Image (tube, rainbow, N blue to C red; front, top):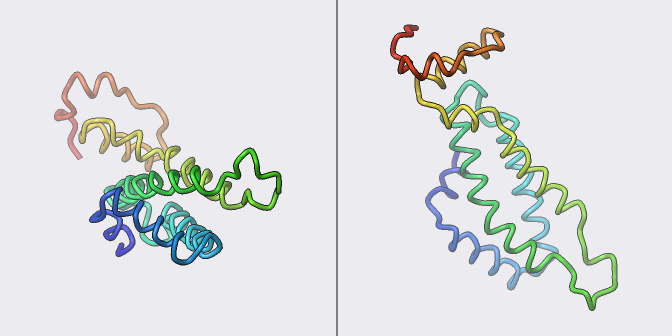
Length: 153
C-alpha cells in the first residue's frame, strides 16, 4: 500500500523527473534493474499478492495507480531504450524489459474490475455478486432502467 500511496501523491511530471534523474546519475543498467523491480512489484499487486482480490476498491485503485506510473516509464523507455537507426548493435534493445512493461500494461487493461467500474455502483455490486455466485448472465439493461434500487441484498 505504501508503494501505491507514493505514486498517488506524485505527479506524472515528478515521476518522469525521478526516472530521468535515475538514468542520468545511476546510468542505464541501474535504471533497467529498477524498472524490472517496479514491474515485479506491479505484477505482484495485480496478482493480488499484496491484498485479497475481494477488495474491489483497492484493486481498482492499484490498477489506476500502476497505469499512472506506466506513463512516465513509457516516455523513458521509448526515448532512451530504443536504439536509433545509426546504432546497429543488437544488445542495446532489452527485450525482457519491454516484455515485462507490455505484460504489465496488458494485465492492467484486461481487468474485469475496470469494466465493472464503468457501471453505476448498484450495477457493479449486482454484477460482482453474480460473478461470485457463479452466474454468467446479467440483465444490465433491466437493472439500469430500474435504477438498481429495486434490488436488495
